[in-house]
Image (cartoon, rainbow, N blue to C red; front, side, top):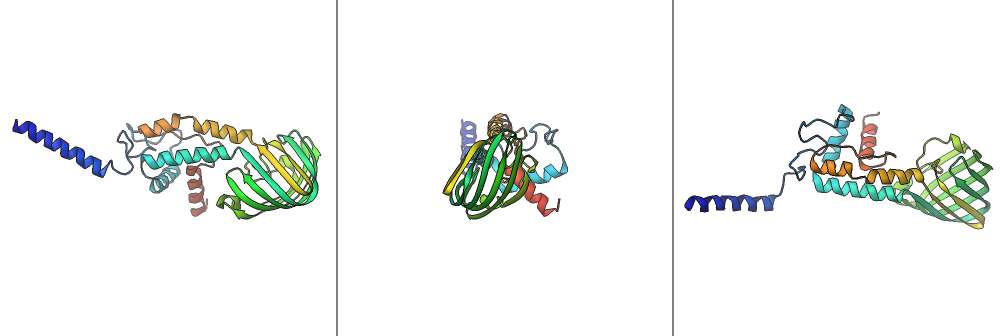
Length: 249
């Protein structure tokens, strides 16, 4: 009987100790010390394994250690991906014109505008000044566009932009540019006021694919699986960009 009491006492002490101290930092619920490595083989996900990726993974783990932090980052990235789908603004200035577009391949417009806008550009909010002239039909659409952020979220100040040329030749599909090539929307300016509303199918796909829980479940279980990030704008991708800048890559 004394042995039974001793065993129960030790078990209770171990349980109490676990409740107080909790699991080790960085452990998944299944006990894996690194959610970016396979729990059995400890190898990186084979299609993504590289010394560079190892370094980005280490920086990610330093900034967001443990499963709870990883879940928080995953949820935050999905929220930002959802915000990226739509853009809108109200403008005040001078000019006139309109633009309607179903992607850059099917648009029509004649527009001249110089003013200040307030609204949302994907995950960025605030006010920005624009000087824009555009005209054309279909894929033959000429753009002279300059945007200067004035006040708002930190992400808005990455949206400084200047471009002159054919819309189809505009580099990149990010909302940091004038619009991404897949945008569906319209703009109207009349004398002193204007408005813009658009949505991006590419950003919508990025949100839907990123929300597929395969990667989430695998990482929580301890098996590394990359989260789908078509636009390369999730937290892991931003850490990779910062490291690339530090290394001069």
